[in-house]
Image (tube, each protein chain N blue to C red):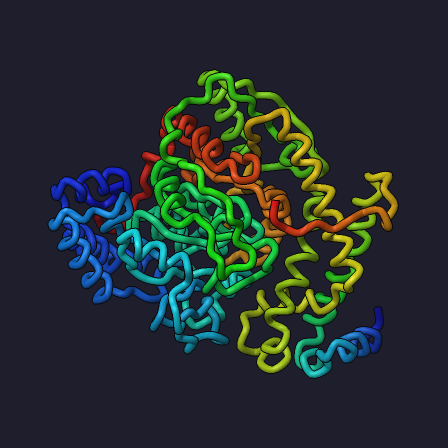
Length: 466
Length: 61
């Protein structure tokens, strides 16, 4: 195994800045690893090798000339293929958009170009962030790095698989009802859904505009904070973007958690919905670690999980149907079966149901804000079940009906998925740490303290080469 | 709901041709949509606020 295989962003940045590692060397290594591994995991839809090498050559020259831009300079990354890059196809993993060439970069891509990061390629997903995993599309679904027969989670499946296998140190996913956090948990990496409006969605294909978030996916918490810092910030051309100063999440990472008040939303995964015992064991271990680190951990209560699901479902269905209505009527056969089933449901959501859901959203968000007056953060599970077989469509569909991620899309508040260990069969388990709106520094700080103490982000899947 | 009910509902939202091609899918979509309101009404029983008092705020926190 090469020392570059699982190099973190933080370590690579130190080496790149000191000219002890060349951006070209790192980029060539990443491209060779993708060449060797991707056929086993189907993480990439497009690999932009020539452009990546050209960007790396520029980064090398800039760093050599003393123009170091910051910790993403010379760092390779991948993009979920619903994010535009000028001149490349944004397929959304769908026949519908197979030839959809983007005219301009998404804002997040511009930010990463400005930071000197190296785009390596576009990553597979569930069709339009909704329909998958499935075998009735032109591209095969991504596979779980810990067991290729298993579902890697979705919809940012390729992003999680690529990061977990060391094909890239970082990726940008999107999260409407958990699509960053679910694959992060299934693949044993770190996935952040930040506060709504902190990362611009200009140039990103929508699923449900009022729930959509972009989020960084990395192997460590520190890397996640570094990537978040590079892409967060106001965009005057995205109406959902918030003009709020981005707090420094990296500076406070290692401030510790002694004395912090952390709530455990236990009823979500015990009485509201019964989680797999191995998932519960993971968060129980984490509660022990957080307590040992000096946090005051208490069980707390929010409205039942069913209310959050009842609120989120019609919002996703109604908002996504508006995006897809014309295509569903004109070329339904070009969608995968799962997308047709999920998206068509929006045709039968009545206006009063959508409004009722928005009313419920106001109430639920207020309940969360009330709770957070007394707590610095809360934790709960991410998924309720271990990943099932990739070809078990029925079980996968049921897991998307039963999870604990939607509450934080409804509130629009930050939530990060971190690993809490492994099942007896060697599959990752995980939890979420969630905070107040715009308090990403607190979420990262707790995740960092927990991650360092628990050490689960240091584990690597067994891959065919490397 | 009868097949005719489903067909009329599909027609009413411009999905008549899609229904003809995927009748089971449209039935499932209708049935899925029909669960939205009862679930939301069940949630609303948790509050004492009548519907006309409940407000909708923008999605951003």
